[in-house]
Image (cartoon, rainbow, N blue to C red; front, side, top):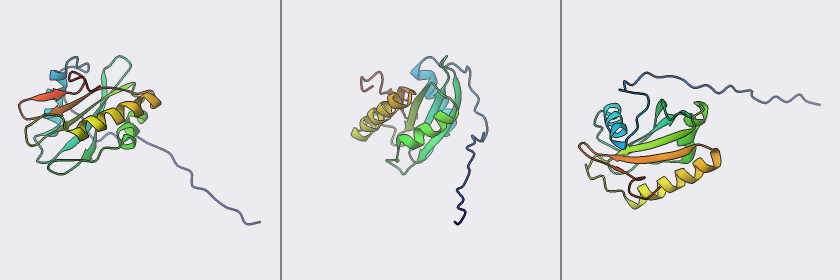
Length: 147
């Protein structure tokens, strides 16, 4: 009988750099929006990021989930939660920018938020909020009653 081999893998989380913050525990959507603006550096297309939080709701990492085009980006729960699970995150905050500066949530923004929240419930990683960031304003989907 012929000997068959299957690949053996090791999964690793790779640190790419650091982001300065005033505190590891950001307690308001305003603080989160300011930190995400600093991280994104005013991009010309939509960028989706996930902030990973510990059980004490302290930020333990940030990951760029998707870089899209001018007015949309692809967001799949698999890509959102992969780094969260590797970091042993208890919760996440999702954020993305609207280059148009209009932070009104689109139907897609609402749909994605609810899909990510449902996936998080299954995985045991709560979606605390989803922020839409503009240059001078932002919208919290939690405060808007979507989540």
